[in-house]
Length: 368
Image (tube, rainbow, N blue to C red; front, side):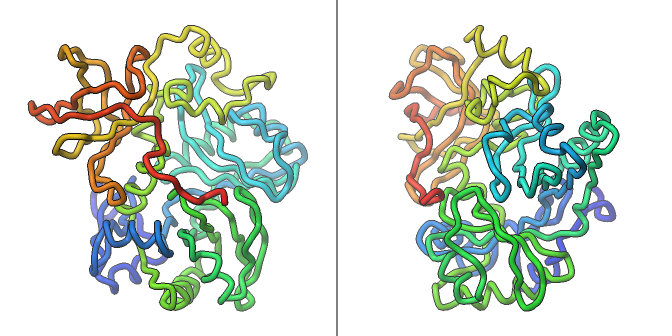
């Protein structure tokens, strides 16, 4: 993407001033890592203490009007009737073939007011599809440019927010409205690292001061700013799906094993017929984990082979696990492949040994 079309976070200047390594991420110039340890140190800070991520590339869309929840429930996979106002829900927007347009989190403010946070590259498409389907009286507005999102993650995150007078202790996948120095923000008990943590949604104009305050509040707990490199290693250790890797228009919730976020008993949602048929057929490949027992780091699209050299899968995400100190991967595998099986991963013609494991690869404290 050319330089003049690359988007920047409201905190871009902060990252540059800190010497962050910047890279394109879904059309956004975002920090991948910071000086002073890089991905491994940042990953470890989140697992053991606390770290701060700028995730302002994530989208924001507001769905409002009488029956907004009911409308969304007929579109998105998960069942919004399972939650109450003040709670958040992981869900997916599928097409008629069951492919995943995007996975997102729905924040139920009321039955007539829902905030959606999709992924950066997919916000416009999710909004477009919802707008086309919306009945009169329901409005869907892309408000991405109005908000910034900061993710404070790690076992010390409560103590950091407590020191700033912000609310903590609410249930996992819930959120509360709050104020910080007179500025409104939403404190969400959500995250993408597997650790206990919070995501703070604030106005764009408040993001810089809030970032500085969080960085200062982390110092007594040996916390640090973290880039998207650590966010990726953290989520891979947990086995969390990433759209474009584990989920796509070609990889359905059935294949990705995210059927737990599908309201199968609902009357309707986009892609229900196709997904139900695929679920019942039991023929598609399924997502699984691979723990590398040899030497090497798997990457997406590498082939997975059985003992006879037959192709039995394909890596969707692969990385070095800073916690386990070895390679790990998520992969789409034939249904005949079982947990505990020995396989090899073809790394540019060199085979590295691995064992099929059910994620997560490590135990996090997200829901504690």
